[in-house]
Each structure stands twice: as C-alpha cells, then as structure tokens.
Length: 73
Image (spheres, rainbow, N blue to C red):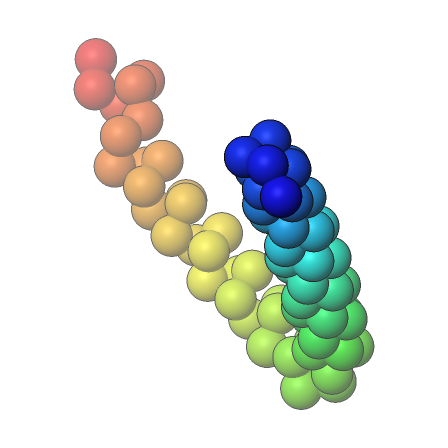
C-alpha cells in the first residue's frame, strides 16, 4: 500500500467519523426538542408560566420607573 492510499484511507475514515458524529448530534438535538415539547405540555409547567410572566413584567416596570428619562429631567 502506497503512501497516497494510506492517506486516502485515513481521510475517508475521518469523513465517516465526522458523518457519524453529525448524525449523533442531530439525533440528540431532536431528542432535546421532544423533551422540551413534553415539558411545555406539562399542566404544572403551564400553571407556573403565567406567574413567571407576571413577575418578569413587574421587574421590568420597576426598572423602567427607576430609569425613566422623563423623570430624570
């Protein structure tokens, strides 16, 4: 086996490994997406979401009130 063949075989092996890794990564991303979708459908999670939204809105209102450019004049 010549040097050229040896390097070509090695390059093909690396390409195969890269394709396998890419496929594994895609599968993991799909699985995370499925898990995320299941969590969002969870009724308990939906109950917490409005409270979190309200809390974030209150914090934003307090921040806006503290740094209101009209009030600083």
